[in-house]
Image (cartoon, rainbow, N blue to C red):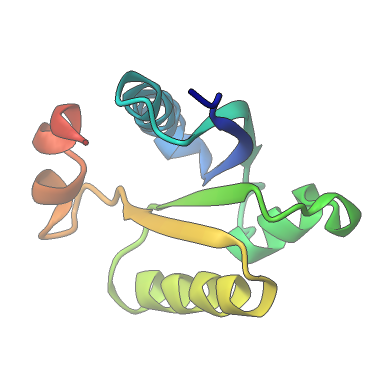
Length: 127
């Protein structure tokens, strides 16, 4: 019976999505613990973006390259849809592929067609 590996979870968000990002991140971590996943997020680090700052810049500002161990995951809460949202997503994806850090983008734009399906009303059922 092995104890789970401790990972660091980074939550990257703009000010307007802070409550949802905090709640979503905590429930994600709690769900893994509840299901006895082989890893848990012993360290949850919020990265609040400055006005006009993109997600990758915020990650680079907050991430110490020397401390990357391969036990990190980044959740990016995207507040924009359309072309800007797609550009942000592509930049995060490119960063993830270059660094090897596990990254997941979550659409939290309330004007997005898929908002309720992905994060709104159904967010209580994240598993």
